[in-house]
Length: 638
Image (cartoon, helix red, strand yellow):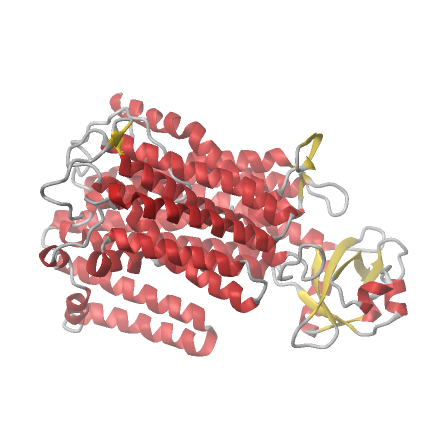
């Protein structure tokens, strides 16, 4: 990144440029707004559409699916955000515009309209994409090359990041859950406004950093247009790209527009990767490139599992975790808000960040295995093992009888954080060591794409864990329905959402649903929208041997559909749902452990392929802090 050749003297505070503290508070408030909104997003989506704190009434699968798209696009947006800074505005102005857009996005989310919801998400994606990859680069620009204070400056900067993330889950989470979801969204916007005010006030301390590069500097590096032009002259690469593009277009037209667009984007990324490999001139560069691709796979796998935190684990904390305390606390009483568990990751990073960093440093000083790829694989395994605690929690849960203990979630987040501290801080550093200098910026973009793809994979896994509930319609209305479902008449009269809990079992191979309190049959009040789903339920209950003597529990969340007449509900069998979540947790554990062990088993040949890229490093015992999910990648971007 360009900096002024002759720097004006910088005012300092506590041994660091004052500009560091401007960026510290700007990023602290930005992360406060982002992670606060992230903590309540999925819970808002699944909350009932009526009542004191109304949400959108989505199913868990629908909510997690949107969460996956949202978090993926936040990371992918960093690619155009970096290009805008490098080619058009410079980092300083790009961060400014990103902050303005973020304030607008969070503010619009406070409006209780669907157009505002989607518009707000879109603006937040754009704003984070413009601000996040550039503000960390500006931190590095505050220091001259070789300045030993630089790493300590990043340590201070990341304390702000983690402080913002920790406080946001507590404050925004409490406001969202207990006062109103849209108040929580609005509070996140106010926080970002504070950050923007700090940034504007501190411009006089940022004169030497984040300015637009010179024309000569902007022309450096790989040209995407030239690479795609060369693709047309490369038969093998063109054939592979064409086949993938045809498949992507088919998905776009025949299956799903969002997934079709995603596959087209991934096809373009693969095309660029193929062209980079073709352009490499030495075997050393090609070998390192192969190892780098494996590193991208590790990134995808890690975030695909880790990002269950804001989706599946968030819903699990709200619905199936016993959050009661044996004592009362101010404001919350004796029940911990579900969103507060989102703060555990930041808290554990602050507690264990230095410990884990020093562990690997001392290990390397003793000439024990501490290569980057070993750390990344170990981090994936440790993080995956955290889901064993979630599997135990799923086994402990009994529908309508007992919920799982809080400490399983705490232990899961602990291992997830330890795994992150092993893997995430070194991932981008390792990739930049292996990437050809000419394509360093392009590999940065591919790294963000891999991280985004991991977030989308997390959404797909979480969506799978929720299954596809059958939809039923109440076939009659009036007092008979209210009596048999044990409802207050005013609920139906006011068209309020409501939940019905009952028993479900097979009676002479026929589906039976009864009221849990009166045991009166109620299935005749409901019509399955899809008869095949009813047949699947019967087949599943038959396989499980579910009878009237040992019934399963069904929960139906009824609501009024905007484009339909009457009440519709999601037919969720609690025992089946819990089994699916258990299999998801165990599946993540097994896959991440096996994948990590395979990488460790291949460690020697993989290290040979790096041709000593890390051999001349000298480990420094320095105190380090890392951001939740994505800190170190930004540090290395500077």
